[in-house]
Length: 124
Image: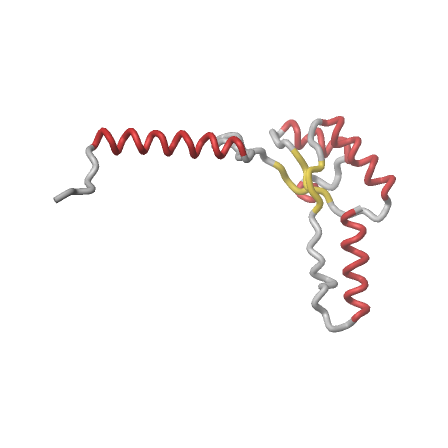
């Protein structure tokens, strides 16, 4: 009769090999290593009384690596804000846009149109 049991040494060898392969596979797909997470915050979390340049500087001084911005209808103003963020070393890495005031699922076509316009602005 043959048993399918595995000794302690064999178990440890296979566990080590699987762990190593999982680590290599994680690196290959761009997984962030534990302990290397980046911190960011929303721009609305910073004091309103500060200038935009000072907001980005404060975020950098507090150890944040990036800022989540807001949609802006004025694209030139958005570009200037992006330049300030880049200069301070805290880039705008994403835009927060919920669209809760004009959901695409609303039965009113005017509300849907408003939502599409808001999403278009956020994407620009």
